Image (spheres, rainbow, N blue to C red):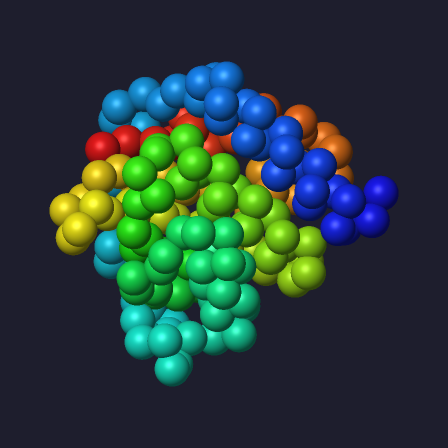
Amino acid sequence: MTPTRRQFGATAAVLTVGLAGCLTGEPGTGFDEGDVDEEPTSDDTAGERDETTQQLVNNLDERGLTVRSTTTTQDAIRLTVQTTGDSDTNIQIAAGAFATLLNSEPTVERELRVRVEDRGLSEERFWIEAAWAREFLNDELSDSEYLTLIADTRRE
């Protein structure tokens, strides 16, 4: 399947899973507030984002998930985004955009950590391991398995 057909198929499947309400998260999972001791390798400003982070931000914006700020460390790309209004949709968009990034940039080893806000108030956090996205791209994980792994990291 070509990347375009795969992306379309993945998007359709992701929306189906989301509409079915299959994604559930458990409170207290995911990354905690205490892991912010990493030194940023790039600033939060749009003019100074590295190429990989900017590519991800552009992809998220195109899909309807507005990025408010970014911090890139050696281990993670950390984003603060404006909610779409639906938690499952936030995860679906981020999952698709991150898989697309790894499909075009196979050397990326960072995980994606997302903080979702609603008008400046923190709503939830979730994260995506690069290995999960690669397994999804290699058909080792189904759409629903990939989304479930991510949803299991979700916390408020």
